[in-house]
Image (tube, rainbow, N blue to C red):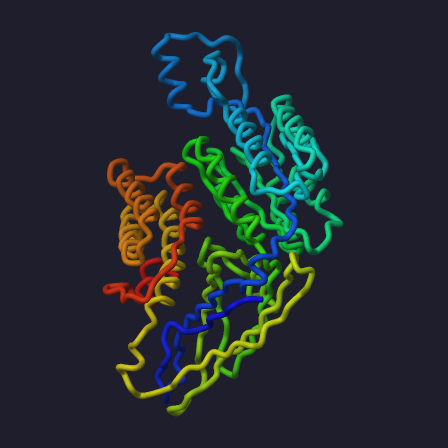
Length: 467
């Protein structure tokens, strides 16, 4: 089913001490040749915000400039979510117009097959299924449902739309891969109801792809919903990015050939698992509150990488080679209509007094660990930016240096932009906070085996972030 590499960031720990020592282990997975060719049927739910604010102009800055240039007067009262420039007739596309255009393009994507299914759902004050789950052999009905999105307006009740998507997916066979694409631009009135529904999506192995079109108040919610369900969060600086996001998600969806992968971890006395994080191709935390750990779906054609954080403590071990952990993996291969289990993978460490051996680290594993650390530092800096600009600047500068060392140029550029804004204004705008906090989770990169000089230690990072 899967080719597996399971190795620690350091092969040796200090012997003769009961003090806590950290070990980070990389779990690197790629489907084998047979499984990689077995593409499962796919079910997609497009859950689209049709609240009044989605009728803002897609390019707000251009709209304001055009209003000023032409000296326009409002053509009528405008009470839609407090936006002041939308009462003008500029013949410019709105956010909803561009969402509709992108949805049409998704339906016509030639990577989707006639047997794949789609449902179209809108939400504002209420929610409605505009197209029940329907095979894409009937594209005309799907396009008609997308066009009807323009008929609705109101407030924002996102949980209602999520619940309808859950109902549409109920009863699908296990061999169907599922994906919910949730598009919204504002704070929802039913936020407390969203988390439990995301948890139910996780139980049915249905990732939520949350796409923010520019709201100021939904950063943590969209990040959390994606993380709970093993999906991905996106923040768009401009609506023109939506087509590329949907294109990328279709590309990933049709390659997910192992679903609901679960890990069972056995430990020796004195060893605990602190965290488990999917680091590549996107970043999300995996709950370690109970076993088995739900790792989510694995795509063909690329690696998926997890990092498990272990603490070894409480036992003074003599110089020796010890198996500290064993991991068992099991998942569905829906394209072959079967469930596979892999032979257990062992994690061995050498306890020694050799300081040189203890200092040696695996650069590839450490690169993924540092990307996990970058995310934590960025999340901290985003929170710090509103109360302690100096500390936020320091944290972002260290994180930026780390992205350079691992070769993540896209994340380096995002952090450069945030630092430039912080230096000029003394703060970071809501839009930029979202860009770095959400964008960084979809911008992780493969790391190589080259050593990374000057990378701060885990202890230094913890001190800097206050963790």
